[in-house]
Length: 136
Image (tube, rainbow, N blue to C red; front, top):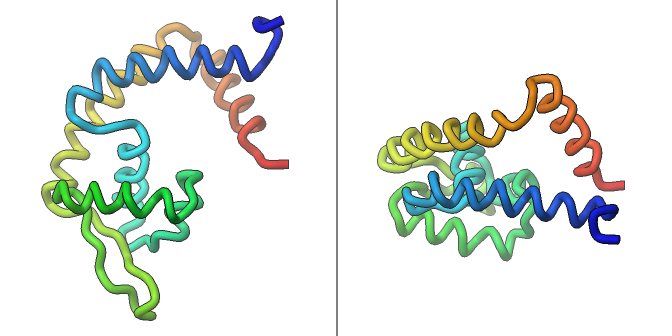
């Protein structure tokens, strides 16, 4: 039964991808979730915590401790927002430098796992995964 379950096969694939990520990018002391947060903050300087939480699929209560850790590491900073009710998030110079190193490793990781697929297969897989990710 298990090989016929989409969720089971997705989980096996996720575990294989995460093992590869951990063996390469993890050596830099950062998790896949933190990488995603840093990339989104880099692309959206000043983003508030609520839209960031939505973008990474976390509730705010789960995101706050993660942001605290990134801030304590010196990679991210919170600044008061214009309306005083929210903070904006920015990468620090150290965070920008660290993220550049991480992105180099992420690209190598992505190339390694994508090598198992033909370019058209990768494109189709990405399309199908996006279909599954849409909440009904």
